[in-house]
Length: 351
Image (cartoon, rainbow, N blue to C red):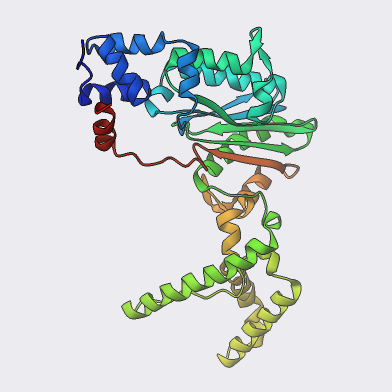
């Protein structure tokens, strides 16, 4: 009946279906305001409806990881939906698993390549549109990557909420493959939480280091002003921010500075050898803050923060060397416009 699509019902149907405002209004009017019938109406609208939904922003969804049986190949995908509600739906969960398996079997690395592949006797694009029509909102296989190894192992970790995923590869001696695979799972958990951007500080670009050097020093100087005001100990202001800047010359210069300080303090030269190593270790730590924020190997291991990730790896087996690391975070880079629902309802109801 006309007028069945009240603003309250439209909002509820949109929340459940992810469909557009006008689609929900039409479905409710066609189904006398019955939410369940309206959901069925939207699902049964077919591929034309799916194509219409393809213009809607898909910023929710799930990260998915598939590791083959012998840990030599791992695939990670980001499959987006419009709403968190649909991302929790079994149909969507099964779909993202099917997509991840298909990506691994075809070896594609972009959405454009994926759309041209064949799945279940049809193009992937047509296949996805048919699933969009059933699930009821736009779905996009946005990001995908597969890594493999002939001489080591791979593994991955997806956080329990499905919003963060990490995959890693490492080389090792043959007899260490099983424990390396287990370690990579733990390192995936670490990276999901700590968000490193590279494996080693050697992978940080010179331009990035130089720009961050000034920013970090400025932040500490600003913090020290507040600490001084509060009468608290001030932070050391670093000369550098990455171990890549700590050349032999820079370290030798700093050691001479420490020796001069010890001499001025009247410390006997015979005990300098006991004091200098600790001072130099602290200097290196204070002057490599960029590494601990961005380089996986330099970070304190979340499962035992008494050691770095690099030390934790060596403790498992000296032959293990990380070769690849990739982290996905759901919706990263997607711009979602804020919507004024009340204003939208008012505008659409007037049509």
